Image 1 (cartoon, helix red, strand yellow):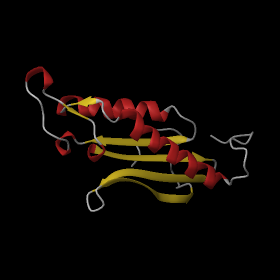
Image 2: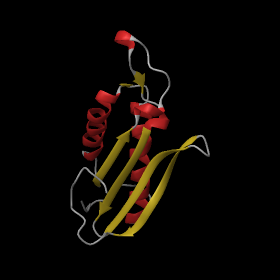
Image 3: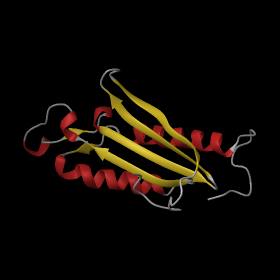
Length: 138
């Protein structure tokens, strides 16, 4: 998706704008979905729903969400037999592109930091053969 009108009021390169957008997408996932009830049975469908929702946003060409319920706290009993989504469960990769520029960013829990770190994993020219739209980042 190449824009004809600048998205940002400041003069940003396409790379800078995509890096900003990647941070917004990861921050949105982190703050919108934590606390959602999740179980091993619902983790996959919840991850796909997050991918589809984020994939609707501008510049997104790939999203991969993995939810690992076993990394959460204790499970309740009976009808309370689920966990709620916590940062330790999430592993997310987003890819965004604007014309020839592509960025990739991740959200992953880093046990050594005891922190859910968001980081840029790639920024530069778009890889050959990268699809224009797609939900599953590689």
